[in-house]
Image (tube, rainbow, N blue to C red):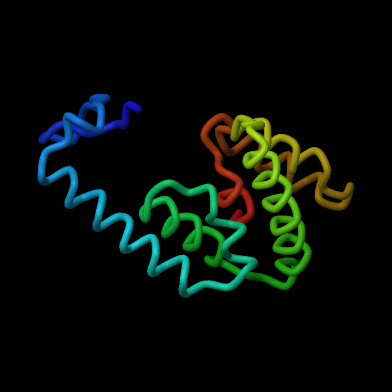
Length: 140
């Protein structure tokens, strides 16, 4: 199995096999595992669904941070929808069905009620839907 690894300058990604890991790589992997375990053990079941597909601690932290910044009264609707949608995505992922991120974002935008049309249009025009994550969309 190949895993990505940045060079010492942080600019390029190199793919290496596990047998090519050095001691620093092993320490980084162990630190990431410990931090991920701490975060997973400290959250509730709804939050777990949100982060279960994240591979690194950085992804987990960014997903949680994005999901919880700027909360409003409409958040109950959005959070409930996000929880249900994430559960479905996780179940599909466990069955081997990988859906591209941009397709998931477009699906969410397409199923929002008509009263949200102006917000959907604003998001579609202002954001790059190829790069937008579900957590960023929910945060918006």
